[in-house]
Picture 1: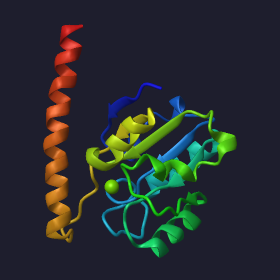
Picture 2 (picture 1 turned 180 degrees about the vertical axis):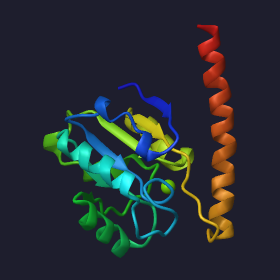
Picture 3 (picture 1 turned 90 degrees about the vertical axis):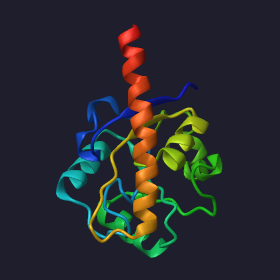
Length: 167
Ligand SMILES: [Mg+2]
């Protein structure tokens, strides 16, 4: 399967109508809440509810080591928390998908190209790349990783625009 990359602003601006009867591998930090956040904004919560109504299976899939928070958020949102020993972009992270759903289309939604984006490419999935949700309290390490991603996104959006102009 050929992957596809889409740049979007926030999770709330996702084109929900395109996604039905599919599997969604949804990142947590920077995507539906800020890094180490425990609260999901109402608009993100509404998007999740709508995606569930469209018969999608949603797995929260995070490289954050805080398993308890992942479980807590999944419970609060009515979705599944994927507990796996692997980390994105390792393809095996997707082994959380039961084999009976193996023929469903896969969407990866996340804020980091080097984890979520590469993961989607390896899976041949459609990637929705959101801008990271930031807070002034983000640690230096977190801010540095966001800065790297901003640069990658900048290069990507230029080449994306160039390709559109050439067409
Ligand atoms: Mg993230």
